[in-house]
Image (cartoon, rainbow, N blue to C red):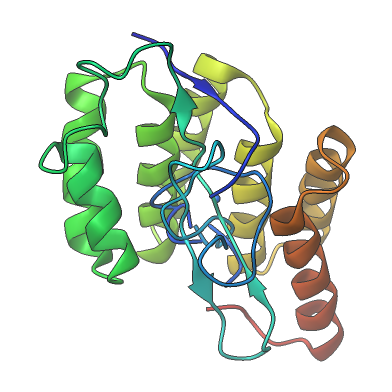
Length: 206
């Protein structure tokens, strides 16, 4: 079942710069819990408000987020992430606890059993970002885009991912595209602000 990313609230997972990471939802990035880390994404990453990943970067005090949107569904029965013990829920829990290796394991199992769940793919990408497996993160982002398209949430997390790699020009372009889609999204604005700070100081993120 394909769920659609809603722009409403929360990373990948858990995402400081958000990596929109564990709970990946990207709606507004609240600088704390709502902020994958995002790397760009953050806390329970609810884009809808279901999931949000929040992360914080030490070099700057700006909290950005990576979110893997909570993909909305008309019914929650049988939907991945509604059971606190299913792979997606366990992945979000581990991501929020900064146990990125365990988060990756659960996200990977989630996409293996639910290959069309965009939230799980964004969370997996955020976990790979935190593990610095950017080659695998790119593949996961590609799958999320295949399912829901280049949404503001996914682009926010991707932009944070490029920031983590030190690819500031690419990060800026991607985050600006995300901002065009959702001009008032706090997560995106926080990541843009963080990007300008690290680019000026020449210090890496995370």
